[in-house]
Image (cartoon, rainbow, N blue to C red):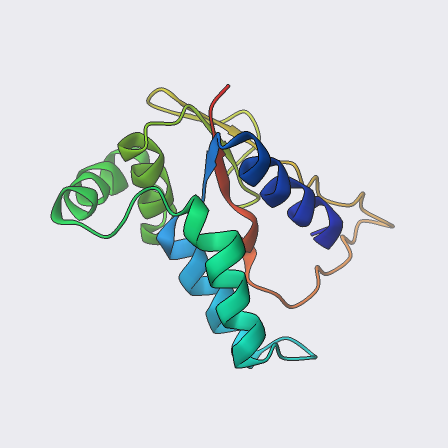
Length: 145
């Protein structure tokens, strides 16, 4: 994943006010950033990220309808549970495009189209280089067309 692209996606979502971030993505970001980054972020920085970057983009919050949608969606779409939560967030928003590296580029789930702004690096001698050890979902941004 390219951190610069992540920053651009989030800045664009904030600037245009057309993007949201799934609460589940924010949870995963903080879980990784506070424990697993090679240089962990401070609690002060975490509070700042939450207030200035994430809070304005949290358009859908935990709710019984969100979980119900994910429970219904998961077996039909055969998505992993966490991905069904992200897609359910897009349906609740409503958004029609999900920028995420977790789902296949161009994949459709109902009316949702997946766009992967983080193409995988080419394989070298049949081996794909390992991505950096960060949370896969930290870059999911849901947006309108």
